[in-house]
Amino acid sequence: MTANELQEAIWRVDGIRVVIFMDAITPLPFGQAWSDAFPGDRTVAEYRQVRLQKLTDAGIGYAILDGALEAPSNKIVLQDLRASYKRNGAFG
Image (tube, rainbow, N blue to C red):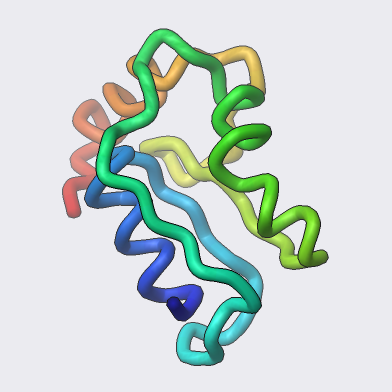
């Protein structure tokens, strides 16, 4: 899976914008796939810890963006983060 494919999969499954700081076509050093959206009552910090830990472990930088293209607080729950995309017209 490439960085571009992972970014698109995260948007499609979890409804969250993540930008991975590497070129879009080089394969990531691991496979990442899940089919269920991360629960909306969990925080951005929990999302990072569960879904994005492999990126951190591999030394690959990333940013989570809200609907205003800013970094959300780690304390924000995902349902509020997802709502920010709709408020700002950021549809996939």
